[in-house]
Image (cartoon, rainbow, N blue to C red; front, side, top):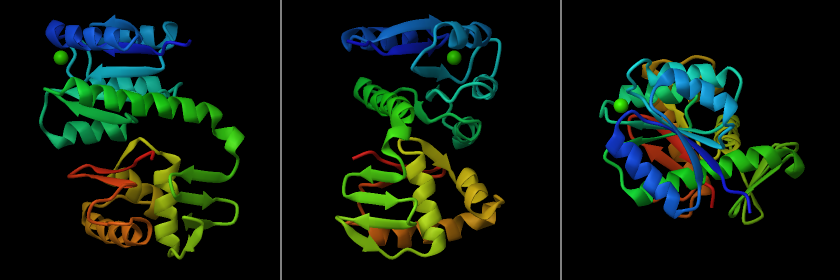
Length: 231
Ligand code: CA
């Protein structure tokens, strides 16, 4: 059976130990790097399925590592940050990270995020086989027809709601920042546009979620953005 390969980039020995012990119990393969320059080399030579990346490294800012890796690869990157500031996470996500964990994090939370990232790396490889239909729980999108369905009933979306839904669906499992969504949908990202994004998201949720106040599909990351959850 294939054992997923994880590249762990972390200079703090205690956290690196915790992550390695956790990966051992789950039968994952891993390789560790303690600084940014070896992380970039290892990302090429070790060919990991997922990178776990500490943002504060001795020789390089983690955001620069993300930018470098994104120059040639779309492999999932989960950022681990001791910093509580949302801006660092937003910068990392905007640079192309998939997800983030704030230290201290629980082992269960870590493993759950890792499974989501591994699933994304797997679904990307097989995306071509499914063609132009997206299926996620009771939600279905027929990209060719431009229609979305819940339990096989068509839902009537405005053009913007449909674009939002497709953008989230195409990035299932990945946290999309407000800036990223605004740029993709409206072509520009202004802080002042975030309230209208919230309004569109609320109306979209009313149409796809059974209980919009406790959404199953679209998760909110306060101060950061949104993520489509695989059911
Ligand atoms: Ca560090």
